[in-house]
Amino acid sequence: MVSPLISGFPASSPWANWCGKSVSRRMKRTGASKPVDSKRDVIVSSGHPLVGTWIEEENPILTTSVVYTITATEGRFCVSGVDESDGVVFNISNTRWDGERLYFVSLFPTTNHEASHVFQIAGRGRARHTVSYSDEYGDHTVHEVWKKRHQS
Image (cartoon, rainbow, N blue to C red; front, top):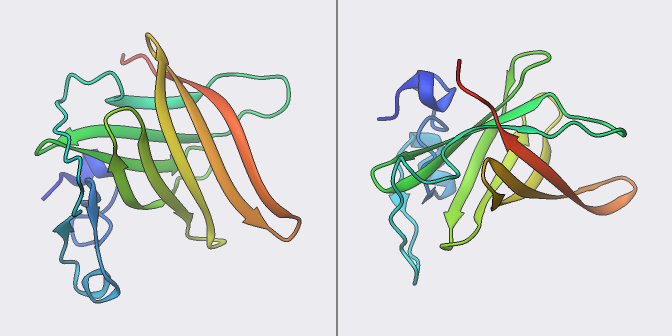
């Protein structure tokens, strides 16, 4: 089990160990999980450049207060997300690594807003973050630059 301090979820939560695993509806109810069946089962380590806490690079339009923390546990990436402005923890699912890009889906529980994410290293301490979502105005894809937060 992933530590609640690492994952951002209580240990009893079915979302607490989303480490590159896929679950069925039945598994979501019971909290059980099973590894993703993948042709490319790539093992990752805690020294991988994506491991860390990521924040959006400041920009003149809007900088989000959402922070994603990526860890490596048992050779798989684990992702957690929190909106630091109000402390709301995102539900993260469908985490998948293809050897170049980290994919995951986030659900903001207070609004049920769901988004698909792709993180890809873009240089030392930088990542390209692509977010795709739908709302009442249509389908959207946003390309952002994120940076790794320095540990104090």
